[in-house]
Length: 90
Image (tube, rainbow, N blue to C red):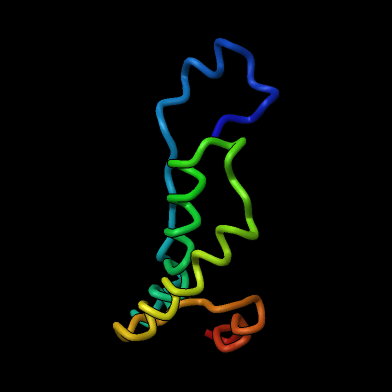
């Protein structure tokens, strides 16, 4: 994704996308997983889908079964904005 207000010269310098996760404040594997998932799935959606074809509601519907798979695999993932409180004192 490239911001709409970039000039042609600025657009030419964009080489790709990245999803940084600064681990300086991540002190457990559980919190690392929580910060990665489903963030990486959202990143893939933005990186690989043309902007005109993105639909947040459809993405969210496709994401629900993926979160269930993460749960089944024992991976700690974020389910909603409501579950962030368990790491507020991390």
